[in-house]
Amino acid sequence: MSDLVVRRTLETDLSPEALVREVLVLDWLGDDVVVDLRPGGLGSLVDDEGVFRRLQVERVDATGVTFRWWPESGGPVSAVQLTVTGNSDDARLTVTEVVPARHLDATAKARRWERRLQALADRCAALAPV
Amino acid sequence: VTDRLDAVFGALADPTRRQIVLRLVREGPASASDLAGAFPMTRQAVVKHLHVLADAGLVDSERAGREVRYGAARAGLDDAEQWMATTGAAWDRRLRRLRARLDPQS
Image (cartoon, rainbow over all chains, first blue to last red; front, side):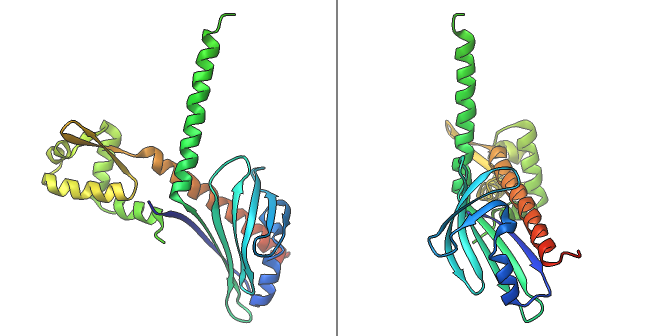
């Protein structure tokens, strides 16, 4: 089974160097962003849905950053690439997030089992003598 | 890296394959012979279409005695669609925030 990919771009009139500087601040990713911005560095943030995410930096260079992140409460680990390209006054940021389909399947299966076990627990509770 | 959704769209670009998926969604699992009886094509042609749909994660198969029954894999597609939709929307919001910081006048 193949991977799932989301890709977005942001066009600007900045130089690539200026855009990379802004991108690497990373506070636009969410709230309470804390990242040790070096390969292997750990970080965390709270996304727009209030989900606490942990991340680990894989690569940082003059073109951007690559990291893996995952919801702390459980969910698929995905790889994120923030890459800046372009010329002196038309830098572009390309965001790519990839999740291996098997991670997504594992999460979905875990969710389904949680629901089944909850249904079983509800039935047991209903059968228990008062 | 192949985008799974590309595979889904590619599989569904063919009108016959769309009809097969619709039939499996509406009427439940069927064998290739059942489907060949419902569409103007050979069983062999149906099996080829089913393999394309299975590769895209749109169809599941299960052996029942001597025959293989095919069904619409709706849960798998829903999970993929849900991830694509929520992740894409989250990046749209983040990029709007970055844009606003880069260009406070916008």
